[in-house]
Image 1: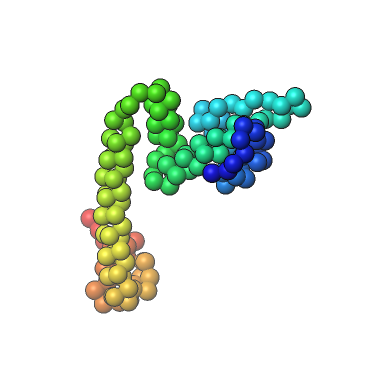
Image 2: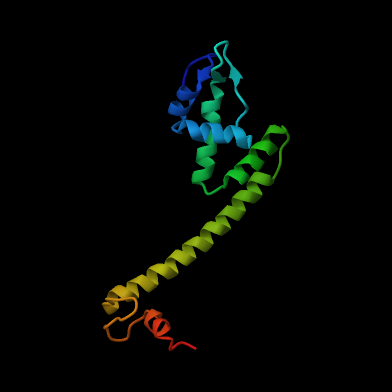
Length: 144
């Protein structure tokens, strides 16, 4: 990613190169996602260059839908140095979760399309014919 050799990076450099803010970097330290940094003779935190790569991996896993707790568990499993089916199982579970969300979004999209097609103009007092929204009935207390 960056050719900086064995040079250690200060907090701001790591954050900038990884595209995170300093508070995120420190939060990940507290969570144990990244190792606590060494200190320079002047007391500044210094990180190994591969911290930037690790942060990129964490952010990519989050974009795939993994929570920080899940990322921490996956990193911990990987740090133990032996193969595990855990990532595959978790990825399969994420696929199922994404499929459920897609189905939910499809249902929502269909309902919104019916609202648009009907010409609804209010959640509580819609004047369109055959309003697909149940909110008016609920607001009036007509629903049983």
